[in-house]
Every structure is written in structure tokens, then in C-alpha cells.
Image (tube, rainbow, N blue to C red):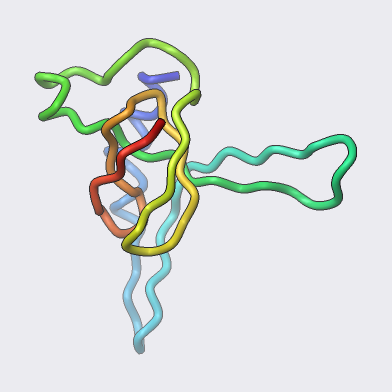
Length: 95
């Protein structure tokens, strides 16, 4: 999972467009559907803070860390506790 996230971190930001006050960006997301609840829970996959992890990608696990970007008010998930929001680039602390 962490290698996939790293590849997407390098590719997806190149498809961001700003036009007439509207910003559109491609992101990697995780969608969860709970059996007993209607609708989907969608969270953006946050990019690990490579500086914090000495150039690495963080822990080799699934997207177990969850949090919230306080800058753009979006739910995020990551394999790392220290990560960046893929939409606005703000640093996020996940638990």
C-alpha cells in the first residue's frame, strides 16, 4: 500500500487545475460502506511526511491511520501518523 501511495503522490498533483476561482485536483481516496448505514464514507489518502520518516514512507501497513485536515476540513487516512493532505498540502496528524 505505501508504495502505491508514494507513486500516486508523485503523479496526481500534476492534474490540479485552477480556473475562475475553482480548484480541481485528482486524489486517491478510500471509500467505506457500512452494512447498516446508507451512503459511503469517503476519506482522502494523505501522503506520508517523508522528511519526518527520514526519506521513507512510514510504517508498512494499510491505511490504518485516520485524521482530519484542519485547513480544508477533509477526512484523511494514511499508512503514516505524520502526513500531508493531498488537496491543500497541509500537514496532518493522524491517530
